[in-house]
Image (tube, rainbow, N blue to C red):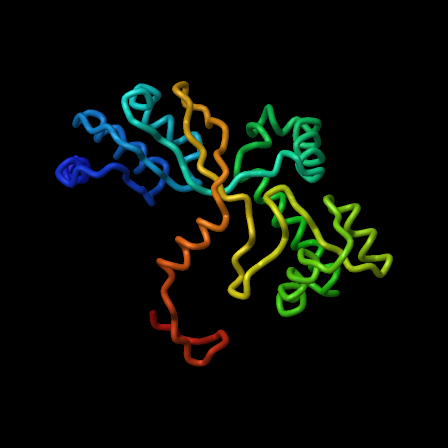
Length: 227
């Protein structure tokens, strides 16, 4: 309740919450009881059922907005068509929830690209397959959308460009993956609503403005860094 009171005293337009689903749900519930109504923005973990289970659906209609900023899927991609249909056919949708759950499709995507990198890198050693993540996910190469399709191309001696469910397989030099960045609001019944895609150029501009530089000794791991 002390945190909710501090938020009330600050009178913000929006609050960004970085906490577990249970802690976040508790905070929002207390804030609602304290008469606070504003925009609440959480992280990907809010998609887990513990968040709404802790919060309840009542507070959702009293707040200006409750949702989480993370990433989404490209529903126009053949990769999404393949994954979502397979997820339902296996019965996973009934057991674990829909394919649109962020943890489901993002885990699938990273596993596919990693497996392709292992194939391209020629071993399970991270020093071999980690650099190959760039090789299999970036141009130049033939665009492909599924593990089987891409694997065949690699074994046929062709370069590939894996386009996954969450976006391209490209990375920055620092290892940040290019994804479909989005904000997902909660519906009044507690279910995730339609993701709202964010402007990637604007998002990058914001990230650059808040980025901090690190000095590492030595430059490459294992090392010690100061920010």
